[in-house]
Image (cartoon, rainbow over all chains, first blue to last red; front, side):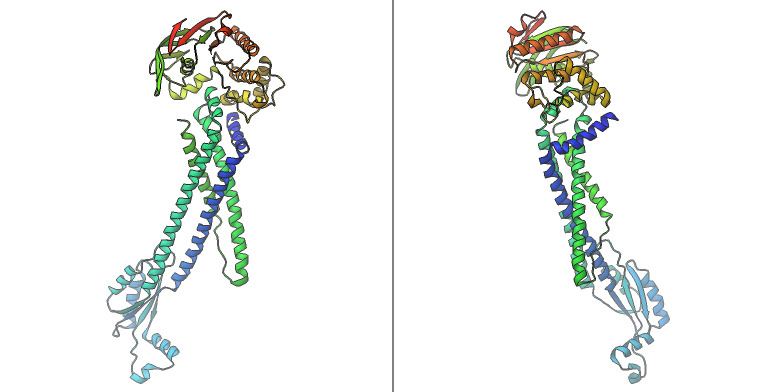
Length: 288
Length: 218
């Protein structure tokens, strides 16, 4: 217990002893976590936008003119079981006529003495998709259903939006990964510099019989403290950015940036993992 | 604690180190190692505290020997050895108290025991009252005594001193040897390397001479 408390206090004291390198490391953790945080908030809000757009995606299915409302109802049930379909709305011949009348003002059945409009169905797509939403398989499945005459959809537009979103996600993940990698290198190098300037400490500790764990621990704890400090600063800045942006948005629109602040705990976890990785990598060069 | 080297050889990647060293230092003995710079004195000492392991032959320190010692046991061995070097290896960002207390933190002593032990050892080496001083505020002789205090605080069975008087004036050098003799008189084995023959010739201890990595006389 005494040994642990000593190592813990050494980790803390090292923050002050190596203030210049600590400042560099904390600042790089702060910068990278802030960037990752901004990317995450952007992704969260883009995802909400995509989900909203998906509520507008519709597929209109028209059945053969000879299909009765009852037969169409059975086909619609079949459609609703297709993976990716959120809901279906059957539009009977009579309802189609009402819609026509409300839109064009004429009762077409009076001219023709019969109702020429087919039974149709509006298919809504699930909006809770974590990645790229593929419309083609849904349309192919609907095409395979008996009595389907025509399908109207905006799959090319949807496909473009979804592809753009997917590429964006991939790009953001790539950037975040690159930032994490660079931060690991920066932390590793700053700890290496610290160790270089503390060769006497390593030598003294070795001479007096310190185990490798005992020698490593203050450097690793120092790295963790740096990461936590960087994460606190980054969290404060992200909160400030979101708060400020929402204040500005409130003046011009009702849209607000929504953030699940639980992601900050992930940010802290990332910071600690980065620092553990960086400091272990640095110290392993000196202590085999 | 006895030190024994049996037919020990060690070579560096860049060149020659030591060849076929046979040496026994008995428990409680005081032995000087003399030889010019680059003759292998530091290599021999490094082998004794197993910072280096021999290419061939065997180094035995008490119950530990270089053939069978596990890597994780080397720190345990070093806790029984007090090492003093010419370069001191004092930590400039810690005061004298913290420097001297370090070995006890490594062993895991509690803070109260440490405070008492540090005061006692600083008095023994004549550094009382300088606890708050940083190494750069101490003279060369004081720094070497601080290094000695750090080696002694854990009550070692063996003292290995590598040119401890290298940076000291003759008076301080003489005082340090007297201090080491006092420690030796209490049963601690002392093995001290030096290239200053005039300093050690008058002391009544065994002198081992090393030249070009080989022992010449004992």
